[in-house]
Amino acid sequence: MRVYVTVIGLSLTLAFAACSVGKRAGGHAAGDPALLKQRTDSIFFAAQRSKMIGDYRTALSQYSDYLKLDRTNAVVFYEIARLLMDSHSGPYALNFARKAATMDTANHWFQQLLADVYAVSEKFDSGALVYKNLAAKYPENDDYLYNQGILLGKANKPEAALAVFNQLEARTGVVEELTYQKQRLLLRMSKANEAAAEIKRLIETNPAETRYYYLLAEVYDANDQIADATAVYNDILSRDPENARALIALGAYARKRKDTAAYWDYMTRAFANSSYSIDEKVAYVYPYLRMLETDSTKLREGLQLAHLIVEAHPKDAKAYALLGDMYSQGDVLDSAQLSYQRSLALDSTRFSVWYQQMWIYSRKDDPNALLALSDTVTRLFPKEFMGFYFNGLANYLLRQYPATIASMNKALALGDDEKRFTADVYSLLGDAYHATGQNASSDSSYEKALQLRPKDATVLNNYSYYLSLRGENLDKAAEMSRRSLEIEPDSPTFMDTYAWILFRMEKYQEAKEWMDKAFTYPASLQNASMLEHYGDILYNLKDVNKAVEYWQMAQEKGASSVALTKKIAEKRYVQ
Image (tube, rainbow, N blue to C red; front, side):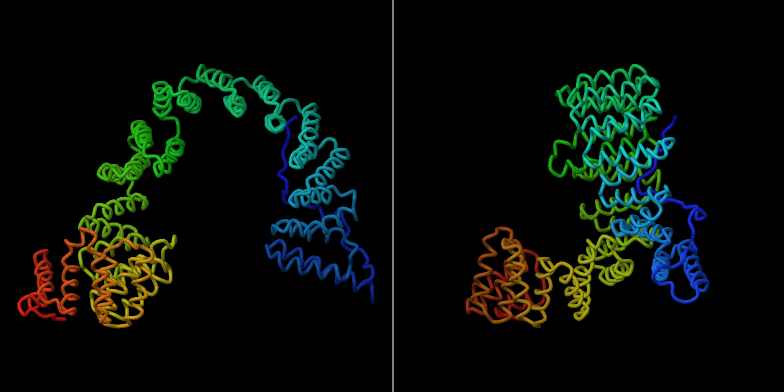
């Protein structure tokens, strides 16, 4: 006999003819009984209609109205319990299910629902008892015994559950689902050999079924019986020499014993098998991308496995995409780019691969290539936020500020599902609006960026610097600049910004102290803007000769503004 397994909590059907709808009302039986029956029938069938169209809230309200008139109808309690179960409110269904089951003990649907409600309420003992009684009353129904065993197992009574499954197996013979449940219980009871024996009995019923051998090997593996597991996997290979799952398992054992040659022999054979799904291969290799975040030594192994996938599936875009991801994570950008290009040549519909290409161009600081690529992406995927984000970034790097503003606003209109880049969009908009003289829009964009990411040191620095250039809200600018330095105290660029704000506030000595601190970083002496700022500060501290010296140094480093030329020629500060 085959066991037909019921799922705990299964939505049940009811033959309503088995239960009377038109029972007389109890304490509410006031007035004409015929009118009362007509009224309750009307409410009941209205509730049934609401339930059938999926309007559970209305149905529950209507069944509740029925109970105000008649509390003797078990069907109504049952229906309320069912609706609460279907609405994922199992614990609230318990009282109604109990009431229905108590009122009509002969109705097995009521009893089964009660057992299911007990189960979802995690009252597993009580649910098991209900199924025990049902199994005694309906011995021909194997599902009741099976569910009793399941709930006993959930109640942490493995011995009792095992006894029930053995009782059921005596009727049905060896059945896969029963054997699976029994071996799980035996493993919980630390009886690995008995669990293995159960699976061996299953294998005897169908020696050609490879899944059973896997199950046996996994039992051995879970109990560190590696030699036994190895024997089972070798048995599988004797029947199916290219069985990928067995090869990978044996490869894992070889790696544990540090037999590198055997490991790669097994893995090469497994991954060369074109019948082994590429999706399963990718799923096996993909964790290496996470491993690379903490262990760079995994790159070589991950790349070797990815190359094996490419060799076995040279016409599948997913193989090259995985290889590209592996190279990208290892920061081998040229190889990653080539792999992504091959993937796109096979399948140009995958936005994730285009995204990785754009990301690489942004990392390689190649704005022209990024602009050309993102133009293509925005045309192919006009609803993708990141296409317009990278397009805006490329235009910004190329100082094409109106185009930056257009792309970034388009990105905002589309919305960022991950919300990770919205603050970056507002930050770049702040910079672009400033570059085009749209100061109000620039300030508004920075404010929005800081609402999303209040500790973004770069936004705090840029916003405060641009305010200082305009000589506006200098107290606010100073506060934001100090906050940026609290977040990144070793940034000479942020020190320069703070010094410049102090300069605009005519706090020249404090400004000089911060510039002196910035110049303790050698790279600062190569920054033309910082050298010119220092000269401005020195001039206002009456050290004219030293000021001219720093202005000249700034000019030598590439500064070429008219104002700087006048400063040097006239030996005076020009704003």
